[in-house]
Amino acid sequence: MPARRNWTAVAGLLLGLAAVGSYFTVVTRELGPRFPWLRDVPLLNLVLLAVALWLSWRGARAGRMPARLAALANLGLAGLFAFYLWGFSSWLPPALAAPRVGQAVPDFTLADQRGEPLALTGLRGAPVVLVFYRGFW
Image 1 (cartoon, rainbow, N blue to C red):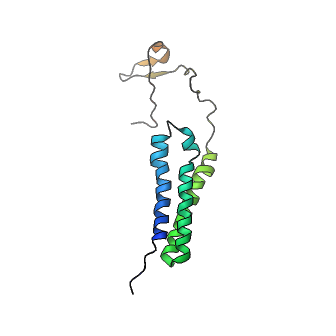
Image 2 (image 1 turned 30 degrees about the vertical axis):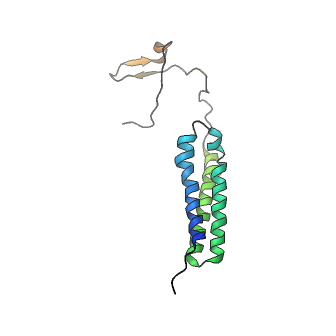
């Protein structure tokens, strides 16, 4: 007798991976800068994850051990995603000293590409793009 596939459990796990993965690849990178509310409250991702958990639950009820393991993995993935959204982000310190949008940037002096000091006030009146890299290369 050939083994019967439990497509509901497989679909639930794949949809759960897509729901969590799309948050990090599409929502935060592509849509987050334009729609910060979508990054802060990922409603679509949470709905997809709820449907994925429902499919996993149905597959685990009707299936054997592989389907139950897939449902357990999907539940763990949903738990880690919820911890990332609401638990981990609460540990981040508030950026109280950060300038707000539209506020003037505080003056500072840095070395240019030749090693000579360049003050921000020396560029007043000209368009300036500030790019800060995290780290040193």
